[in-house]
Length: 422
Image (cartoon, rainbow, N blue to C red; front, side, top):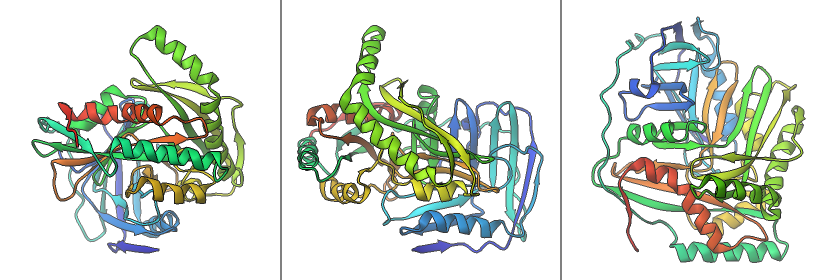
């Protein structure tokens, strides 16, 4: 385990109620700002009071302990008293133990939830808090034409990796593995994340639109939400592409709900989440999934709910849940080794937990899917990611089509896109 931290001598936090500020993304004048939105509600933040960079297998527990330490001696006045008000930190964690995860305490957060709007200013005791006024930021602009090319593996190489995974599953070496591929996007001009985030929030309102430290996207999968002891996890596994024809899509949804291949994949994912949460409280696990309809795809989905009895915080639950079978496979250790061998790429923070934590330890942590990572050296470049669950009945061409469908949200959000043959 390693951690790079700015020392925090103590926080001064002030949350006050404000009139509805309108679209939250319109307030964000910092392209590098923090975003957590769903159905128009959520939070946007900017500035940095503190920042911790973490790595290693204990990064989640270290983050939880570091956040608790930062709150000791904090002076807090919170007039809103809703999830997300008061002290809050945004985080994004790597899929693998290697690499750099980040937890950020912003200077200003503007939020809205269930008709209640607030602004929180955070500072250290020896510094003046940042000022805030409800000013709409200048509208972001697009990055011009965007060209896509294959990333680590070509389409043919990735299809071959799928075939190899199916062979290993057929040989009994594992039950499921999730293989991801990356695509590189190169724009004519520097990419303003707010442009893409606006399109994602508008087209995928039921997903969680997020931006943390250069990772942005709109994910449909909630790893864990903890609120006053109540825990929720939305598990997605089993996917079919939409056609745009409502009648045809209803037939496809019915076939997805009956598909033995997809039901097998889904059951493995649900089991991994339920097993991880079972030691901490009582759970309700539905007997069968429902079909979640998104603009580009449909998923088999199960909402696992329960009550946590042992006082675990959201980040401590993340430590037990990650990586779930929905983004890794079963058995976990074998699947992780297979991923490292067959994908041949560094996932970075793709498929890792992304979200926020509050003063009580409650919070929301989704899985970073349907996302892209900005290139830190070249602001015109991004890496887009998509992954597919591979089980015994998987066909390489079908998985390629599914990966293409999962790349659609980010491709559309970037604007004028064309593929470059490599």
